[in-house]
Image (cartoon, rainbow, N blue to C red; front, side):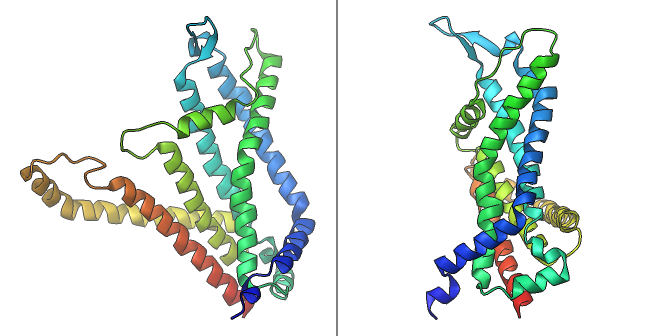
Length: 283
């Protein structure tokens, strides 16, 4: 098979142009909504916590510096918001599938199934993940400005690029062999987005609600299976390891790589399911 039948750059560019022209208003509205929500959250919570003198210290040069826990706390909040926003944003993928007429028009486009899948993957996951830090930065600065208007005391503004500094610091933390919670959360968010993308391609009505419900059911079944396996085998494993005089740690049993492996497996399985769902609709 000629690879151009699977992916043709010119044909893909036309698809991207068509989708953006049809859906640019919705995309802009999504991004503006995220900025407003981040600004609201920052104005009511983040600035209230991080403009207190207790979060600053004087370095050897006598300069006022933020304490390390501020970067960590902000990064946790940023990751939580990322998980929420990417689930919602990806849940609106394949907007043409929301009606039968637009679905038919989308199927008749002279693009391969692979091109249609790649476009939604890039737009909904890759582009959003890159833009999120900029949306976070804009929202945080708007939020702290709004907070300063209503604050009863003088507010010390955080650096404009503080979100970049906080995330860079947190993602580079050495956690002594255990999974970096920030990197793990980012990978988990991308894995969850793959489930939402499958749901968006499968469900015609209320894709976000149905996809979130599917994730809940999936996690519940997985949790119950994990507990059952633990009850059946952990006591024997624990007894064996203690007889060998070994410490049971994250590194000893490779839990870190099991978690990452499972998330990558989830990513691959659900993106494959999305591809074949698109292929089925095209038949």
